[in-house]
Length: 305
Image (cartoon, rainbow, N blue to C red; front, side):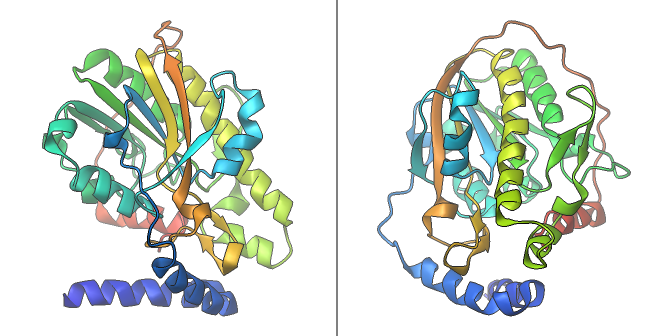
């Protein structure tokens, strides 16, 4: 109980330390929206019918609507209430507290840095933590989308399971830009961690540049989702998100745990199909295990510390 109280106090202090004066209305709004909308009807992924579930980290419904016309496989954008406003909440509800009879027939390929805390690999048909292929000396603080696609296709073709969950870290910051082929990408320096928001607060970027950066990062992810859908078989494929993203609405920023505001709890739900046309030969990556310091450093660059 003491540990739980300390964790809650730390989460309360974090906005004040990291956001300056904006942290005060932010904390007030966070607490208000933890009690507001108590009657929302959350949707567990296990209550829906799908063979392939593509999870885009921190994707808003309006962002998906903005790019719908650009992707043939995004034909209509529905939405659902997520079980969390933060990856840890979503992972805990979906996997740590998930039903054994569903987990044992499900493979999970993920680039989310919180998976080791909430995933028990022995409960799943297959589990692949894409961060383990980055290496401690990697320039990337998060797995680029192409690595997730490569690993997901490899798992899909080599493992036995009934359902596959593929968790990309985009459009979550940092933003990526392509400098060559699909595997030649670089993080956008000004988008790393909380510096992204402080650049906006200082006036270095406009609100349009801030939101457009996320939408462009969504396009980057969806380009890889297209490749995924061309290289796995799934009669019923769904594209959704673990949570959304606040950009100043009601003084909320980012995606704090326990918040029930629609921008962080309402997520897209797009139904499509996938057919393995074998257009991709996945790259093989050398696996390594990150130490605790490496994980913490990456979480800090993502804005979680």
